[in-house]
Length: 66
Image (cartoon, rainbow, N blue to C red; front, side):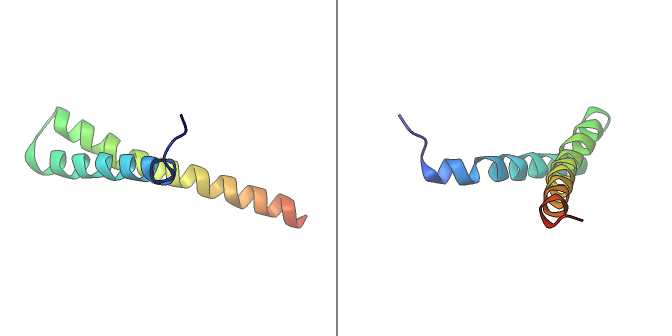
């Protein structure tokens, strides 16, 4: 059985959005472990975007021959 096109396109962005939302709520409502969770859940999407941004930049410079 094949995956739906909707899930194939939006699964990871929705997961990162839910992770970010849980981090924002956790930062507002809790201390100690909530702070740790908020740092992790708000930092992970930044790391993922940085990874794919650098990966794309590296592939485009290789393709252009620079």
